[in-house]
Length: 492
Image (cartoon, rainbow, N blue to C red):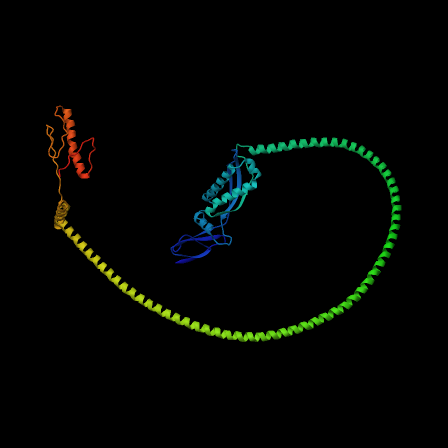
């Protein structure tokens, strides 16, 4: 029915089936009936590739690289989304199989070629560390979607593609440059040796002449210094004697000044002592007077405080009595207002209940009326359907029967009769003979009778004008212009 599975330290259990929505990862678990359990190893694997790429100058090269890749494990040792992706996409295959190897190789080659195509060969050489870091980051972004993580990446030195000798030529160029630089350095060292020897000989002669001149100058300077020092010593002796005499005179004057100051200080001290005694007596007298004033002040304060306390207690009692009276009056008024509000609320509730009953009765009547109308309509619909079926589905015969049965034709006749009742039509008859005469109320517009088809057509046009103008006048009251003609005046 069930089995208990345990994975090794470098393994995980992938469980699917009954009771599991997706995939469950665990180190140990019970596997029940209807479930499948598969162990997969999470040890990183080394993948060694030789990536063929091309720089931006269209120079092909081979980049040997070794990547240590494995599933990504969370920092706290638990399985996360990356390990779940690995269990779904990579774990079903052998890590050393060609499928996984080709997958990893495709990702690494694609990112390396894209990055190399955007850099020159010199940039790749000078920035090997940054190039390696960029390849590492780009490949890691692509491997994240498979739950894989790059634990170590080692990019070796670039190698020429077979048939290309770029790096060989570059090494020869560097070697030849070093040889040429060595020759230049040897020639320059020889030149510096010859020039240095000559410079040393000239410098030796210059130094010897300079030392002789300095010796003579030093001898003369020393003799002058000896004479100056002797005169200086004699002057200093004289100055010292004068200074000693001045110091003695100053000491005598200072002693006299100090004696006078000591005498003045003694007299001042005697005067200050006498004054201090007088000042102390005055201070003591002031202190006595101040104590007396404080005693009188405290006595007056006590009397005033007693009076104020009595007055305050009296006013407080009066205020409390007045406040109590106002509170009781306010409470009585509030109680009265509450009772009145309760009465108004009860009355409003009664009115609302009455209105609700009336509205419910109206609503019930409307519902019953609607139900009766629905019943009548349904009966009419059933009646029309039965009649239509009896008439064999003839819609026009059913319409005529319903119009006759409803009295629609009689109503139409009555409405038409009412519409024409009371009408007094006015009929005017115009006649135009060949002799140019006119009927009653007409106007002669034909002119002299003369033949010709063209003249007859013109005469026909003129014959239409009198009845047209007469009708316009009767309907609108408008008269034709004077240049066209005038209508006959009606007899009184």
